[in-house]
Image (cartoon, rainbow, N blue to C red; front, top):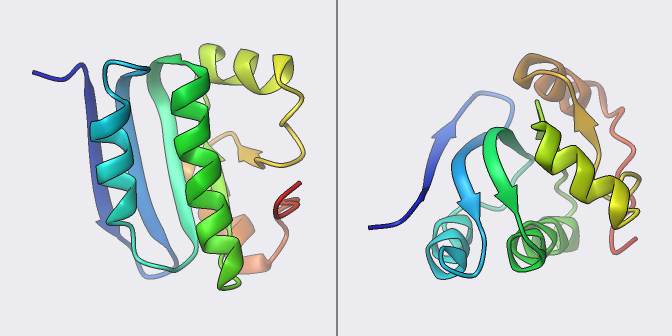
Length: 121
């Protein structure tokens, strides 16, 4: 049994991915498989329930961002947990992986084209 739950929900403006649990070496295969099914369109990854984001978990998110950027789609992290914000700060990826405080804000930023994503950053 995995300690990471991932749900993928289509919304009118973007795909919504919600992740709960630990994105680490023990769950990376499950995480990668789930994110590989995300359609090629703007995507919000809601991370308020992520209690651990290891380097391999972060790599999976970056791979999704790279795949989406290759076709002109964007990725925004919504409601990042303290653990996710800390990893982004330590790795200095805040400018590469744009964040918004809520899912609604992330969807609005995608609709308005105001994300600060730097593809391949």
